[in-house]
Length: 147
Image (cartoon, rainbow, N blue to C red; front, top):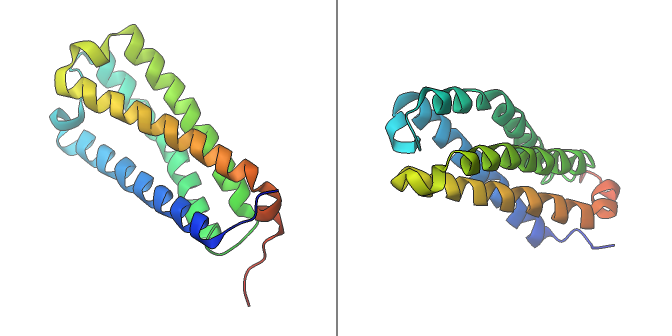
C-alpha cells in the first residue's frame, strides 16, 4: 500500500485544476473563436467535435468531484479519480481513432499539433489519475475528514 502523502495529493490537485482550466478554455474557444482550436473545417469534423461536450461534461464533473473530495480527505476521492481517469482514456480513444483515420495530425498544420497535444495530455492525465489513485486506493478509502 502506498501512503497518501500531502505533497503528492497537492500535485494531483494541481493536475486536476489545470485539466479543468484547459477543458474550459478549449470549449470557450470552440464556441467563440473556433478557428483557434479547430484542426479542420470539414462538416464531419465539426459534427464530431460537437458530440464531445456531453462526454467532456462528465469528465469535468469527475475532475471537480476529485478536486473537492481529495483535499477534504474524503474516501469518495477514489471514485472521482478513477471515474475521471477512465473517462479521460475513453475520450482519448475516441479522439485518437478519429484523428488517425482522418489524418488530422499530419494534414492540419498548427491545428493538428494542437490536436496531438490534446490527445497526449488526455492520455497522460487519464493514465496518471488511474495509476495514482489505484496505487493509493487503501489510503484513499481510509482517510477521514479532519475535525
